[in-house]
Amino acid sequence: MRIRIVDAFTDHPFSGNPAGVLLLGPEGFPEDRRLQQIAAELNLSETAFAHPLPPGGAADWALRWFTPSTEVDMCGHATLATAHVLHTTSTASGTVRFAARCGILTSSADGDGSLTLDFPTAPLTPETPPQGLAAALGADIVSVHDTGPHVGDLLVELTDEAAVRGLAPDFAALAGHARRGVIATAAAASPDRGYDFVSRGFFPAVGIDEDPVTGSAHTALAPFWSARFGRDELTGLQASARTGLVRTSLRGDRTLLTGSAVTVVDGELLVTL
Image (tube, rainbow, N blue to C red; front, side, top):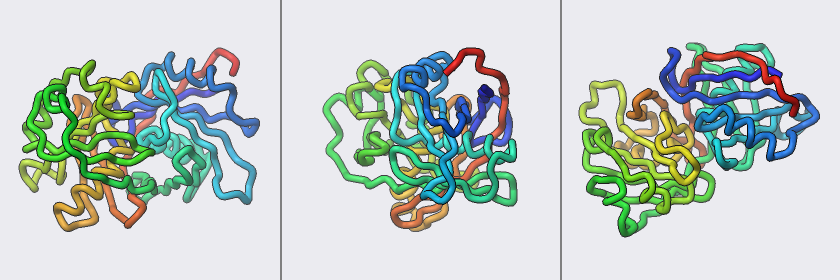
């Protein structure tokens, strides 16, 4: 069975967010334990598993995502990586519909080689900053929002871009503050840098101290910053060590996420599923 590692939300290798991708046969998913073992072996922030569905239904492929320690409800970069593999191997063309825990997701190929994902927009609920969160992040907090059941993060606004870039969190202390993780964000320091806002994503509760580029978090970042800037079309820079760009387009209860991807490893899984 082919196993690929794809760098997502980047147009060159060794940047963006790497995801494992395994395309399975029509017989469906093996037992959960085996999927989790493979994801732990790859030890990437997410590994995606997909299998084709019978024609005529609401979706073309079933899709699941696993971190090294658990299954998650939604993952943007591993969905982009899966769509990239489907398109570059001519396994699929045009719009591809995925059936996932969070509902039906779609991907479509753009003329410039990028891919656009259609995801549900995260509902934002203002919250009082939890006690100890500022200390765990090591920064002053401007505002905090819950991002709803599928994303499961706390969206934390900081004072400026420098504060986001300079974070060195206490990951053990941070792990207890959200169901999935904490997204720290601020407006870009200068509008001429090619992005409108910055973010960093920390997920120690699911075995990932810092995620390089978190597509699903941008379903919350898009409505948050679109309300601030008064524009539906924005670009976010996730300011991890690898960095990555996510173009967002707010469409009411749906958010479009656009980015590129590059396959960096194409190999063979030598164990049976």
